[in-house]
Image 1 (cartoon, one colour):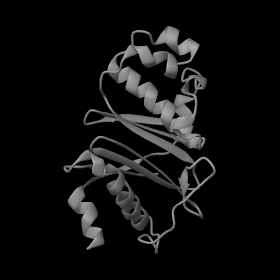
Image 2: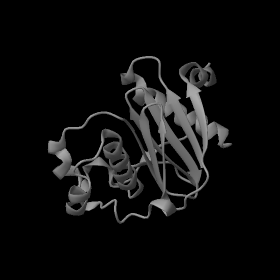
Image 3: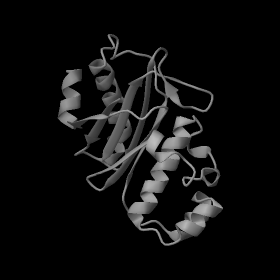
Image 4: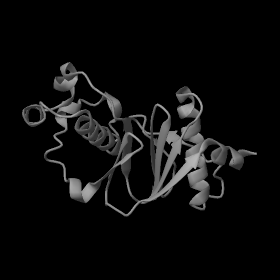
Amino acid sequence: MKTGLLKLTSKPYRASYFSKLLLRVMLKNEGIKNWKTVEIQKDANYKPFIKGDINFNISHSNNMVLCVVDKNNSLGVDIEEIREVPKDIFDMIFCKRELELYKNVTKEQFCKIWTIKEAYSKYLSLGLNYDFTKIDTTLLNYKKNIIQWIEEGYICSIYSDIKKEINITRYKEDEILKYYD
């Protein structure tokens, strides 16, 4: 499972643009010959995919972009900056069991739970329109399917069919842009 992490030095609004460039660089590094022109399609729930054996997922938050590419392994990813979250939105995110367990969570714990829910919903191809209260993180098999770590004040989560060792490559904007010269 190849994982790319890009820290932007320019404006965060460029994260969407750079996430597409990062994906293409990672496809090149996977040996995809037409990496610059590969057609990215969307399924019925708007999850992007590439025909063939390559699975990928992308997430960005402020000035960080997370992209994971894997052959033959479905996945979903999320990255979120660790920040204070208003407790009045907990009932829109947590199921009943979680509300009881997590009523006094720290901002870091909240972001860990949130990124698991988002990565899992993206893995299922449900996206952000899914009712997150239907995902009970206390029942998900963390050890088998979740990879999670903290990177420079961000929580990164990957949910996949099979938990594999990840190989993280950290990029800078200029390193990504050099592929397009």
